[in-house]
Amino acid sequence: MTELVLEVRDLHRRFSGVRAVDGVDLQVRRGQTVAIIGPNGSGKTTTLNLITGTLRPNHGEIIINGRPMAARHPEQVAASGVFRTFQNGRVFGNLTVAENIEVGAHLSMSAHRPFKGFNDNPWLAWLPMLAEVFTALVPLPAVRRERERVGARVDHQIDRFAERLGPRRDHLAYTLSYANRRRTEIARTLVPEPILLVLDEPTAGMNQSETAEMLTQLLELKATGQTMLLVEHKLDLVLTLSDWVYVMDDGKVIASGPPASVRNDPAVIEAYLGRQRDERGRHDD
Image 1 (cartoon, rainbow, N blue to C red):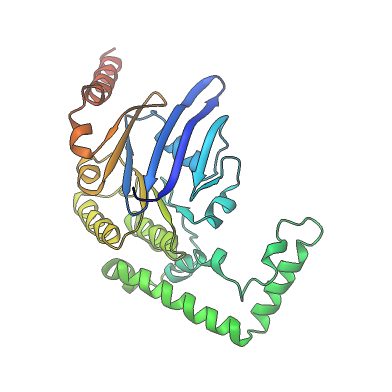
Image 2: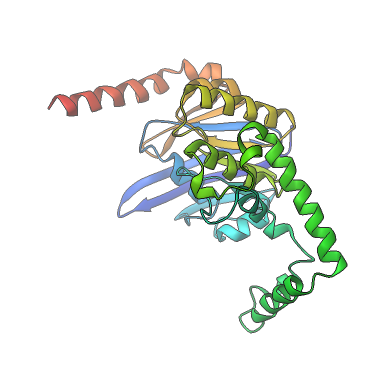
């Protein structure tokens, strides 16, 4: 069997008594693309937030590359090699496209960040900050070489979206269209070469042609062996891209399997069609 990159066991998260995530189990193996689908409010994004450390679980285990990570902070999850995008596309508006993408390399830098191991020490946390200021003012040869390596990685990711981001690499991010902000965010998460790329609705806000273009780019990324976990509402994209699909409803996994089998699962059909009937009923009232 292919090596497990992510394993989630009996994950729970409550908000004021509401069980947003209720006993979720899932696995992602190296090289797989795994999707989580389900009606609105089914717990998909909350599950991603728990996996990436944005939220803490009330119960359960999250194991990344064999290491339990359930109670860690987002930066610790990122340091383990898991990087994510967000539902609403987060970029730094006052930085250029290239500068936004370069931010993704921050955790992997060593010459630029001497003494970074002291960041968690309350008595010596000032030391890494002082060292970073020094390396910025006095770029030693190792710093210059690292800057060149980071620049090459940024260029590689811009080339991935060459038609869209190439002509805009020096544009401030606040001037970008919504779709190009999403591309910039994805490029930023790829710079550190994640062991697991987590995508929260990567085509949200995109029209049909933009969605088709993004699907092609994600398929190319998959072909390189990149492991991905995504939440997505566009089922055609999910069925084309994914190796395995988990379906959530009311905080629980109600079905899982290859895309073709999940598509025809009676529980999945009822979750979607039943929810649609309920929504139509409320509108009629």
